[in-house]
Each structure stands twice: as structure tokens, then as C-alpha cells.
Image (tube, rainbow, N blue to C red; front, side, top):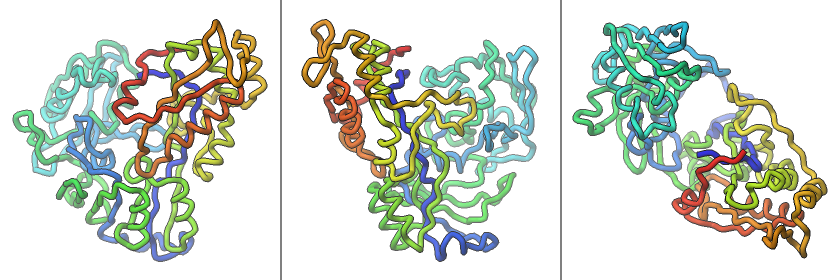
Length: 416
């Protein structure tokens, strides 16, 4: 799905919010880790099949591993593949599998197991969004330790895509006997003990080939309401909440936690973009209108008011810590310039709005009717944007809709 960019805001990820016995400066980094970590989740983990579209990313990442690992700074490192070679013409990639690796059910990781995993998504129409699925034309296994991919065309991002969580992580073949998914089996540092609507438990995989976790167990508890998660942290029911996806909390909740002496609040670089897209079938198809909207919204003030210091105005669609995310785009706030641009494009002022060819310059802004727990109410941001656009003569009607209607209303075309 492609949408032209009107305006984006990057939100700093509140990666970890944990109860602790002392202030951050007093923590002894050499102290032994607690054997169990209790983690809040905003929703149940779902079926943990790495080749499906359900399942909590955090748990999938803990249970399953890729051939290639994506490390800090966007560098690639060996995962379940000890090494790989790329043909000079870029049309073949050969992986040498790591020796001695087994799935947690005892099944060896060999080329047949890797091919079985790849065959579940390569060329599958469900994964047309995933370019690697389309360019891999053949998967061969010259021997038990070697997997060779033949590509229909050179595709430079292939190795990066082979490092993501789904659908490329490797599932034990016995976890899908007869095509039906059964309790998950991976090669990762953690193995699943239980999984239900109320939570999940992972145990350390003591037979893992790599560095083993210091913790013995991870216990996940589903608490849908973000304030309830904060309360559970405060009263000692859980040890950790936060993150953009596992158990998000609002900036206001983060601010209140930062004032407590028994909680450590850790923030990281921005890892989420909030994007305002538009339907090209109408005035937004006019580039002058899009440029005027871009100038009319003061993103710096908006971020400061809504995100309590835990966000920053976007200068690109993806956060700058994402490799190859592009260069910074110009950012400016100039409502007088926005008015002048609309004037030049033939949108004449008429009362509080503007008209061109008898048509009022107006938009319907779809927002989810119910914000996800721990996320800002999108109507708050929508109202701020609508106020900014009203100041330059653009009328905005805010339309809260349920999730299904929201995605039905999103255009599938791209405007440049």
C-alpha cells in the first residue's frame, strides 16, 4: 500500500520501563540477573507460526532464528548460516549451515529443514508484499549442510530480508505436520512452555548453540489497558512494560513513571512513524495542495504538545537509525507561504474556506474510533491538524471509524 506523505511525526520508543530496587545510577551491572522476568503485553501472543501474519514479534524473535542476523548499525552477521556466498551476477546465494544445531524437539537443522521452511512462503501469493518471495525462483540442497537460492534477477536487499522475523524465521518441520500448525518449535535461545489468552511463558533453551540467556524464564502477562499495566508495574505484579509493540504506554504515563524513584525508564531512538496520508482522488491530487498542507502544520509544536518530550518531528518517512532510510527532507512551517501557494494554484478565499471551480477545498480525515491501549488518541492529533489547516482555509471533517472501515477507506494508489 503506497500513500504520499503529507506529514509525519517520529515517536521515540519507550523501550523499557521496569520496576527496580534502586535508582538507575545505583544499579550494579555485575549483579546476577533474576531467574524470572515478568513482562506486560497489550494483547495475547496468538498462534506463534513465523510463516503466518499472527503472533507477537517479541516471542517469535525469541523462539525462532534466521539464516542471517541483522545487527547494530544494519550490519549482517551469521545466524543459522555460518557463511554465505553471492554469485558474481547476483543471481545465486549459497548458504553454509551451522553445524550441530538442533530444533528444541531434537530434529537436526539441515538443508531439508531449511528448504521445507522456504517452500512455505517462496512464491506464495500471500507474500507478494515481500519481494524476496517473488525473486527466489528455486531452492536447492546440494548436500545436508548447503542451501542454494537461485534468483530470477539480482536483488541486493535479499540478505537483509532474510534476517527479518516473519516469514523467514525457521520453524521445526514437525510443528506443521500435515500442514496444520502445532505447538511451535524453533532453534532460538527460548522455547515455549505455555501460551493462552492471558499470557505466555518461555523457558531458556539450555541446548542453544549460541550465547545462552542469563534468565531462566520469561513470563508474559496480557494486560490490555495501558494504565492497568502501569499499575501492575507499580505494585510489583510485573517487572517490565513498554516498547512500541509489546506493551506501549502513553507519553503522559511515561512522564509520571519517570518521577518515581523505584522505576527505571529507558528510552531509545525513534522507531515508529506516524503518517498522515491522503486519497489522490480529489484536491490532494494537486501537488500545490499537498505542499500547502505540509507548510501549514507546525510539527515541532505538535510533537512538543502531544508527546511530552518523547518524540521529534520527522525529517524522513523512516527513522534515521534505519539503514538506507534516505536523506532528511526539508521541514518548514510557514502558514503565510501556504496561503500564497493556494492563492497561486487558484484556490480563492471564500469566508473561512477556499473554493476552486465551484468546489470547496475540504477533506474528510479518517481516524480510528478507538485508540490502541498505550497509544495517543488519534482524534487529539487530528483536531490539532484540522486547526492548523483551517488557518489557511482548508476545511477538515474528522471522521472516527472502526478499524475495518478505516482500512477500507485507505487508497491503494500512489501519488507522486
